[in-house]
Structure formats: C-alpha cells, structure tokens
View (spheres, rainbow, N blue to C red):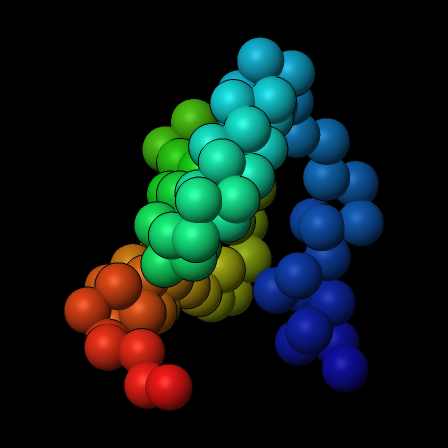
Length: 97
C-alpha cells in the first residue's frame, strides 16, 4: 500500500488549471460530432483534449511532481502511449452492425 501512496500520493493535492474556453470548445466539438453521428471523431476529439491538457499543457507540473515518485514518470509516459494507441485503434476499427 505504501508503494501506491508513494507513486500516486501527489494526486491528493492536485490542482490543475484548464481554461474555461478550452473546456467549452471540447464540449462543443464532442457534442457536435455526436449530434451529426460521427462518434469516432467525437471520441477522438475527447481523447485529444485530455491528452493535450494532461500531457502537453500541464507537462511541466506533472514532470515536477512525478520526479519525486518511484515510477511516476514511467507511468505518465506509458499512460500517454496507451491513450494514443486506444484513440488510434478506435479510429481505424470499422463498426459492425
């Protein structure tokens, strides 16, 4: 249990700033894609915004916080790769039905 606390303990005091304009843009794009029936593009837009906010916009914050943990930087990088892979597979997979 201590290893989890050491690795993810920084999440208890996490304070991220995401501009309201970007949140509104993400919601509008995702809603628009879902309304016009482009579900994959809606999911891809959502993944894109989450990836941008977590891995590009707040990279300095996360790297500073994760540098003090025992595996946080590797987890951060692996999570980014997994998100990109899921978005890619979801986009190229054909829908059945």
